[in-house]
Image 1 (spheres, one colour):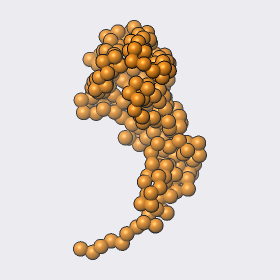
Image 2 (image 1 turned 90 degrees about the vertical axis):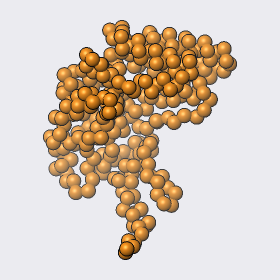
Image 3 (image 1 turned 180 degrees about the vertical axis):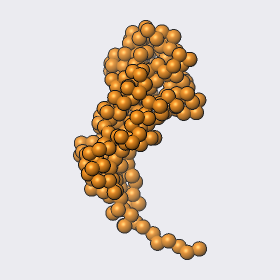
Image 4 (image 1 turned 45 degrees about the vertical axis):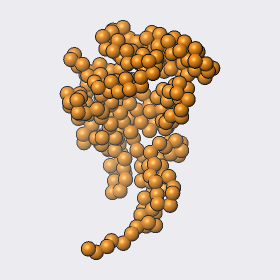
Length: 256
């Protein structure tokens, strides 16, 4: 998780991604963190060194020679339809990442012999999620036969969302989706990550950009000894609960 600071290291984001892609067997993802200004940061630091998620996406596009375009990034809650589909299919509650859309963004690239191939080159992502939502709605009708028909028709819909320009890689991608949905082999989804590199960004807040709407939909929390769950950015910025918690629950050191 590299911290990105404007004017300090934002010229290195493309090189970091390329470094990770060259070592895909051991590096599964890069999650950039635009700097949050806490502690001794001054207002001048904020003015000169603040970098936002859109600016970071622009740097990535520029420094990967347009291979990973800024438009290829999607906000974190875009994956909620997948959780809803799995829940409708299995009947078991699933984790849903309903965090605020301004908290983070991500995409995937597949590392091939020819270089990096963004998932957006293989699949029309918007059409893909529309197909997933349609499958979820149909599964809600119930019935074993309906489940099978829905999945078969759903895989067809998903196929039509693929990009023909990347037929070789797209075929492998759809094969994994088919295994997961029709053969009920969710372990097959692990294969998705074998040559897939996650590229994401999570921008934690500070007192200069504190947003209550984002806090209310936080998905990263601190648990305190008195049983409270405090949103990450609230704990570290805004009201700043960190010092309060430390003061209330600190224990004296013991001499050995």
